[in-house]
Image (cartoon, rainbow, N blue to C red; front, side, top):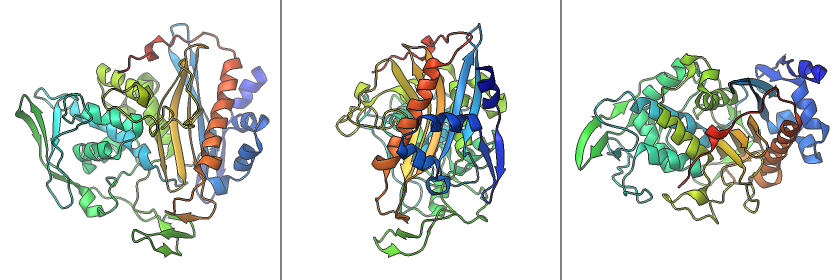
Length: 414
């Protein structure tokens, strides 16, 4: 065991055309040891599948304080993947942080009404999925984490404001993160720089108004990002050229993992990298990150469509597979254009096991984007499930100096 631990601490950095790749030989050895032919095929073809994995081991001391250690496989912050719905996570964190800077009786439960202030903007004054029929930041965040709701993300993107959002993230050191757009396909970059006027209302009276805003933040688009050999355009025409992601959202896996870690274990990252959140913010985030769609009363979801593992890739992603009651995944996922990503914290209350696992993969064998022909079910989800199960088996058998006390992660759901 001493030899294994010593080897596991080694991280090899490789220089490639993409940049510097982080690899921990022990992690690759562990994943290959009992890998299925499918997983071996993925591991043997990093350029095809563009996978990245970060395993975060958590050790507790006698006072139950956690120490987190990251292990890497093929992790390269310069290897582009489309983050898709993963950008909803920092937008949600930043919304809570911004809200805590507002004085005047506004909180995350206050009704938030969105006006239309510029071309193609949408006004929102009600939310029939909430208990009181009104939209709020808290309810939008719940919708984001339970089913990765696009509309909820758009409203929080507008509340954050593009410029303020990037100032918050970049000041925390996440300088490679770029969140340029709502999830509307027909909005231009300029239209996405404009965000709506927003009013917070209590007892029928407006108690705070955030004016419409324009973002003049400058982005670096000098590095071209081209994917595939062809793509279908918005007119459903096949274009025999790569799809250009240069002016799309960007979020390195390492940054997403660190953001999640900063919310789950604030003391494990430097103060300057944390979001300014309240204790109630943390508790509500933990609840929504781990809640199953079937446990939600508002919104009430059709569980044939939004099954319990709908947004859980590591371990689960199978509508027929029931998630054990003693296991919870606190996570956020994203999927689009053949890219799948999951950043999660797994807790097993029965066996006193906890760990973080972050990863992504690209599954698009025909190299045509936007054709909805991706190998999510054939390769992507099995990849996540097997990697998750391998790490979980390792966690079940590894020795710990102190058994973790995990009571703080037991949540009350709707």
